[in-house]
Length: 94
Image 1 (cartoon, rainbow, N blue to C red):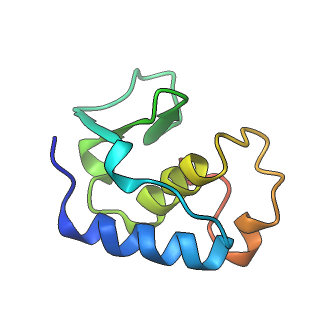
Image 2 (cartoon, helix red, strand yellow; image 1 turned 180 degrees about the horizontal axis):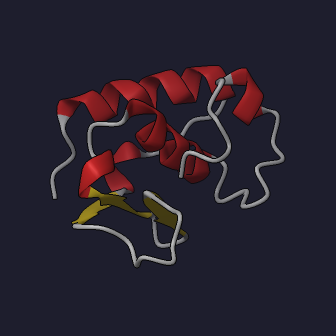
């Protein structure tokens, strides 16, 4: 999918608040109807620079920003970097 223009604005914000820079263009975006029933995630980032969003989360700024921060932090699965608080991004939004 092509990311909506709103995602570039979120990227700019997350870069600024995290004091990190990255390459928005290397991200690949995917939508799925939903994640498996047993999954609690609404979105997922992976080390191949792919972000997959459940359709219900496509317009959710918090969920998208959460995954963008994972990209800028090159993962941080434990949500331990100070950027989570600096950006005021809930650690459980992904």
